[in-house]
Length: 380
Image 1 (cartoon, rainbow, N blue to C red):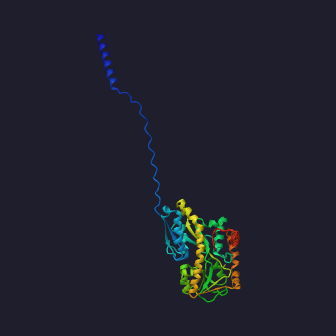
Image 2: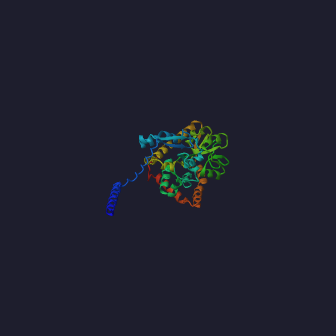
Image 3: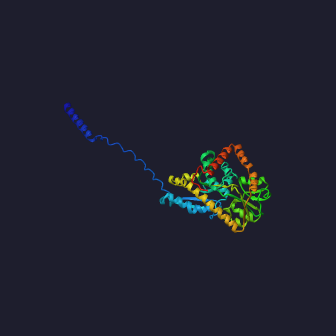
């Protein structure tokens, strides 16, 4: 009996083990490792600007020779150099005659990115570029706009302290033009003594010279010249003859003098772009602006000669009288101006600037270009 029970129990256990084994599933074979997540797609390149816009601001009317050149020659020439694909994207918006900013605020506007390009007149920006204002000294021996322009360019190339004064700006061109004449409506005034007590529109170093012989120097915006002379707030203006028709000065001045040496001085003017704006441009556009510089300056020197002749004709045709000083009369002006050369040197040296070095260098470059020993393709 026991033997039968043991056999039955063994059969039950065997069946149970078989059923349990049949109910278990085999472990799955290991599958392939999961794929690494895909790298994010690279961002699409920013689309090229549809337009490259430049806000241009200056103090002269649109009919001024330099502004006519900018419209009719500079911008078309720039586009030509860039080629149609890029050149057609360039647009200038023009604000002449201080219509966007007063003349004294234009450099600040470009520096702050409120405008892109403007003119920079040395005698208005002495605090920014005191060493470059050496170009404002009278009786330096320039003799012509071309010689002065070449000497000034060479000065900036060879003396780092001079070039550093334009930090934050890209110089598109510079030109030492507007040979000075003295115009008045107070009679035939010829020597410094004659001008004592007169109200004379003059800026920078020339204004200091005026004060030294007893004149009252007034620094006024070009837009205010006509009104001041017309209303008797001033009676004399020291400026280039090309300004006469431009600002209708032939209506308020009737006598003018020139200097036999042609060397009472010139007005240094730059065209500058904000450095940030310049560096934001495509490399090929930066290169075009740089390549255009020498050609632009040569054009401006030629324009200066034409506009000066035009101004002289307009003044004489309006009934004005233009006379050349005698050698003795010019010497009287040289005598009052000469001390300001040393004053300029000492004033810069006292502030840690290399005044003597710059003065000697510009005199040297003037001599080189007067002798024709060097050339940068700038006429004069």
